Image 1 (cartoon, rainbow, N blue to C red):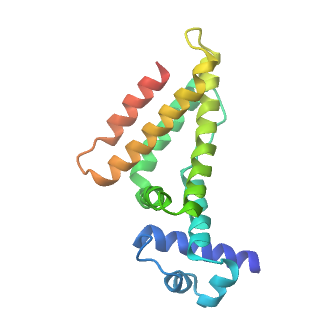
Image 2 (cartoon, rainbow, N blue to C red; image 1 turned 30 degrees about the vertical axis):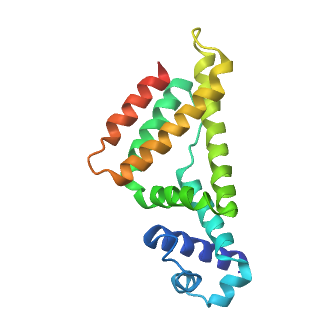
Length: 182
């Protein structure tokens, strides 16, 4: 039961943060969303920041790439999935981008963001290495830099898609796909 309660609180924090943003979300709001007393939230989490980091992990799990398959097909599949996620997961992406900003001034949140970005970049690098392995015109030494550039482009596309209603996200992902597989 304690694990279920903790999970319910984290899920409620994720929901409240994605809906209302960091500044407007209080521990009391999260407790109300979870259907528990605020004291119970404090029992599981020492601070709002600790709870935000746990909610950020949920956010990052929903954004995480999954890799398993033919290198070129897998890369194209992941980028196509990303296009779909841009439309379907605006709240998740919005929370992630907000946490990027919060992380500039909050070391605990920054640590959560950095952990996700490193994990995601490692998966991208693995995909890049797989693609390079079947090609003769690239070196494995390029994989870390290519993965970093792709990861940065993805974050940039997410941010632009959130704030610019005229931004053509699908076209940007298509261009990224073409560049990544060239």
